[in-house]
Amino acid sequence: MKLAARISQVSPSLTLAIAAKAKAMKAEGIDVCSFSAGEPDFDSPAHVKAAAKKALDDGKTKYGPAAGEPELRKAIAQKLRSENHLDYQAENIIVTNGGKHSLFNLMQALIEPGDEVIIPAPYWVSYPEMVKLVGGNPVIVMTDEKTGYKIQPDILRSAITSKTKLFVLNSPSNPTGMVYTPEEIKALADVIVEKDILVVSDEIYEKILYDGAKHLSIGSLNDEIFARTIVSNGFAKGYSMTGWRLGYLAAPVELIKAATTVQGHSTSNVCTFAQYGAIAALQGSQDCVEEMRQAFAKRRKVMLERINAIPGLKCAQPDGAFYLFPDISETGLKSLEFCKTLLEEHQVAVIPGVAFGADNNIRLSYATDMATIEKGMDRLEKFVKSVNG
Image 1 (cartoon, one colour):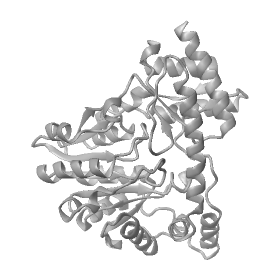
Image 2 (image 1 turned 180 degrees about the horizontal axis):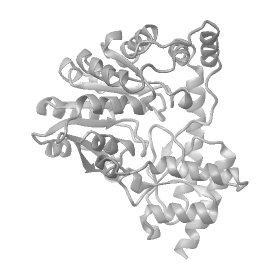
Image 3 (image 1 turned 180 degrees about the vertical axis):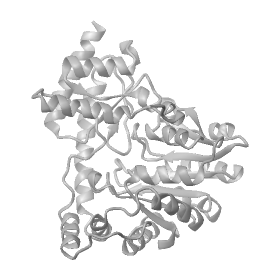
Image 4 (image 1 turned 30 degrees about the horizontal axis):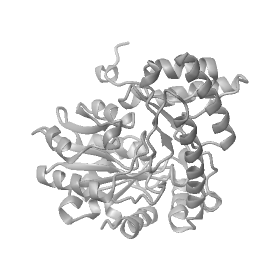
């Protein structure tokens, strides 16, 4: 069987692969400390589940509009206006099968063969692969710890060419957890407007912030940047609704109509009764969000202190999300070998930084219980000491 050539250009997701291997080892009875999955360990909020159950009882089990239930699109638009100061209406929203799907639809609707998409590294694993799948060219721009793993305005400007169509902005970031300050967002917006390109702002971790860090939606700055902004978001991280597969895209109506056409010929509507759970998430109590955030903050502190106490590892403090992205270069190992050996010999699952375009780093998620964190850090310390002799 001859497969499509585009598939050979796309790498499988290392994050999903390692998470799957860790789960398989656990199923065999092996005591694995897993820091691999980007998934909160909390249950979905009770009022969200209750709303979905009620929707089932009320017969919300049929096909719905491809762009999403009207009530949910209105609720998302209201959320974006009140929380993010983005002047969107329901017609500017499409509900998708997770945040990842919103970005996939965007690339399908917007990017043509030869178009360039600027992606700062370290990056979320799927950004460049989605661009490749539609024949676009991902332009990877490296950042480092000196700049907080954030792209600088002059670097962005120099990366833009006549073929540049889109810039991918992710704050808070997966994998680094870094958050662009309002001043940094404004500086990037000036370049985007000056060069007249589009920006997609992936804001899936916007509610998970620490130490007074502030999230600013880039499109809220002025009319010129708003016209060039596309927002991707969802319910997975902030509301611990990963398995619900609920995301959304907010953009000019023309783009939303195009994304709806794509979705109409691929998945059609998102699970109907699940969308009523999303409405409850937006309109109900937000105490569940703060409860998780506070727990993540405590775990972040413990894991960060443990990692930075290990000779051979160093890690910058993240301001958001639930990841640490330590530098392992002093161990002399590249990330894939480091992670493979750590899992096989010490039963600790972490993600190699090469998956994110940074082979001298690894990613650890602290979206797990404190006991697992303490045990896993003991094993990580033992492994690094054995490597360093």
